[in-house]
Length: 246
Length: 350
Ligand SMILES: Nc1ncnc2c1ncn2[C@@H]1O[C@H](COP(=O)(O)OP(=O)(O)OP(=O)(O)O)[C@@H](O)[C@H]1O
Ligand SMILES: [Mg+2]
Image 1: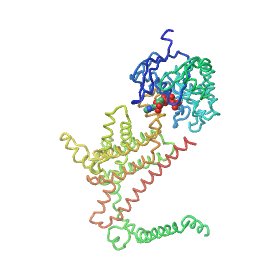
Image 2 (image 1 turned 90 degrees about the vertical axis):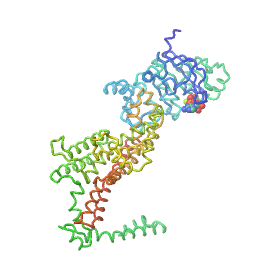
Image 3 (image 1 turned 135 degrees about the horizontal axis):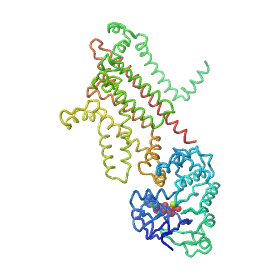
Image 4 (image 1 turned 180 degrees about the horizontal axis):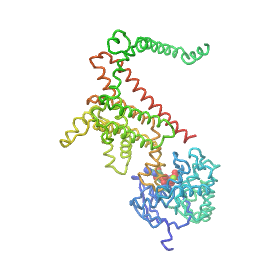
């Protein structure tokens, strides 16, 4: 395949937290429009890996290229990458001192100098997309977890990102709210957004993922198309993990 | 009548132990009032041409305060220019009333106060407004206290915030080291010595003929001193903002200053409103120490008034009067901070 088609290119990436080797020789390419679900036991380095992609964590060895930009220590480049790569967190991390609308317009206004009127229109557009336009004037503290996570997704969308990273977007939610968030993510997937999703929601993976990847102890153990991955896992560790979560 | 009895029983005498404490406190307050009221009100002299009347009466001599009022309010400010000082007091009260409305509670409030204090100083000095110049050495009394406190608060707050940000910054160890040293050194030194340094040593380092007014030197000392304490308060607020907030702001592509200004500081600062205002109150009280570099602020002016040979022996009245003024200020400030905090809290959490 032509190298340019990959929107994320990772070669021999290694990362340490002091002495602890948390990511070991990671090689990974993601094409534009691909939905990649990453799973693995707690502490296996899933969050750390996707946080490297927008430089929330720095890596020590190897190379990581996002949308043609090398993720290193050039501040300008990193800010550029961050405006193109959205991130949705486990604990939503909405800004509690701002209304929903202000949460959504903050990024576009202050990183892309988009005029307020335009930023507000865009925010309302995406709030409708995540199905809570009526909450635009509320504060995050007044919303349920599921609503907050949908607002957080809308906040990422307002930056018109090329890629969105999801770090266990539903694992802090009450069970009855998981579906409303997954539905929004499924819609996004169908529209062709490039998504890297750390999640144990196997239903979601089966339904929309192009590829499922299993990590353990800082290494990529196995990756495959979802039907192969779930029905026919190759590695013992994958089998063990799958038997535990299903 | 029985209502009062029930109220008293419930609130003052719920158990024998607490009842005894209540009785002790009530009798103590009663005893103080028993002695204070006759002196301060019943036997007090309110108007008198000279101190003889007061000395015969045996009560408080409020006539003395009345006689020295201008001096206590304005110090040595020239009598014929006093309207300017009145105007300054009026501006100050106007500012307080304006700030009291919850609608005014935005960042622009700092700009309003900055504008106010600049106009006050222009007015007092007069040169730029085409009025006769009054040097800062003639400013005094309540007006001087207000100027010191206002400039102190307005400038030490941003200074303290910058120090706190520098101290919290892990990526720039040099800046962090500088901020830590400033904060720790200044906090290890009493305010008086800082004032002496500013007033006596600073001129030694400046080229001869280059004079900074004593007022400015005192203000600089106040700002540095209070800024370092505020920095520690703000640091507490910064630590209380979760790491997820930094990450969310950064992952939107916001630069360091925008992350701080738009996301972190608004949260951090509103978490520490009470201790911040506590620092302002101690700054306000600390300004009285400028007396030792012979400036006549509210306290200095009152003490000078009390040592006038024609009115000797009425220092008590002066101090009671001062206590009332200081209490009014500090009480207003702390009440204000509580309302501010409540307002911010009710807005966000339900
Ligand atoms: N800032 C840090 N400093 C030191 N060690 C860290 C740090 N962050 C994570 N780790 C360690 O690195 C390892 C991988 O962490 P990571 O958060 O990437 O795991 P994860 O796969 O996302 O797990 P989980 O499913 O629990 O979220 C863990 O052992 C964790 O303790
Ligand atoms: Mg994780």
